[in-house]
Length: 334
Ligand code: AHG
Ligand code: MN
Ligand code: MN
Ligand code: MN
Image 1 (cartoon, rainbow, N blue to C red):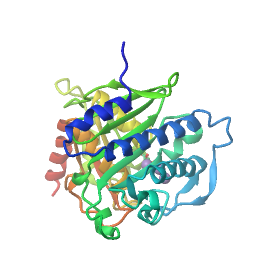
Image 2 (image 1 turned 120 degrees about the horizontal axis):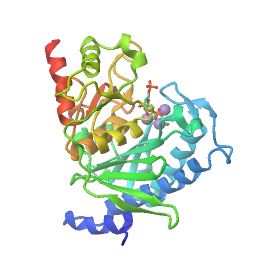
Image 3 (image 1 turned 30 degrees about the horizontal axis):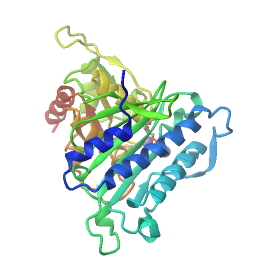
C-alpha cells in the first residue's frame, strides 16, 4: 500500500486555495512537528520523570501537570520558529503571546489558539490525552494585533484540528473542506493518511457526559439523560454510556462511531466548564465539517461571540440527529 504523508497531503490540498502562498501549509506542518515531539514525550512519560504536578496553577486555577507545561512550550517554540503565526492564545497563559514582536513572526498572518495538552487528569494514568488547535487569519498586517482580531467567531476559523495520543497517535484536521485523519507511523516518524474524508454518522448509540454532576445539571439535560437510558427498540435505546474525561478522546470516538458528548452548565460551572476558544470552537468546526452539529443549548457554538480568551461555554456536540433531540428537550423547557 502506498502511504500519503501529512506533508504530501497538505501540499496537494494547497491547490484548493488558489491564492494560497503556502503559509497555512507551513503552519500546519509546524503544528505536526510539535505534535510529534509531544507524542515522543507522552509515550515515554513513565520513564522520563515527566509525570505529575508541575507545581503551579494556570489562570483557570487548575494545577498544571509537567506535561501541560512541556506541551505548551513545544507548541510555542514550533510556532515562534515557523514564522507564520503572529499570536498564540493558550490555555496555559493568562494573556496571549504576541509573536509579532518577534522578528521571524512579525509578518505572520495567522492567530493560533491551543489547548496544548487536553485531558490533564488522565496524564498519569496511561489513558488517552490530546492536543487541540484552532487557526484564524490576522485581519490587518499593517498595525499591532488587537484583541478584536484574536476574538473572532468560531465560524471564521480557517483551520482546526486535534491530535490524540492514544493506542496509536492520530492528527485529525480540517481547513473547511471536510475532515481528514492521519496516523503516526512510528517506524518512519510520519503522520500518514489513514482516515480520508471522515463523516460522523447521523445517529449513534453512545452518550458521553460526566454523570457524577447529574444532580447539578439543568432539568432538560437530566430529562435527556433519562431518555438515553429508556428502552426503545426503534431508536436503539438504551444508549451505551462512555466517558473518558479527555474531551479529545471522547470526541474522537464520537466522530468515528457517532454519538453525543455533553458538558452542560452546572452549579459549579454556571457558564459550562470547557473553553470556547481552544476546546469547543475547534472541535465544533471539525464535527460540523464531518456532518455533525455543536450547540451550547441555546445557540450554535461557532456563532457565540467571544469576549475573552478563557471564556467557557456549555456544549452539546456529536451526531446531528442526537444533538437535534437535545434541542427539542431544550425548547420544551423554555
Ligand atoms: P484540560 O485537561 O485541557 O484542562 O481539559 C480538561 C477537560 C476535558 O478534556 C474533559 O472533557 C473535561 O475537562 C473533563 O472534566 P470533568 O473531569 O469535570 O468531567
Ligand atoms: Mn487544564
Ligand atoms: Mn482541555
Ligand atoms: Mn489542557
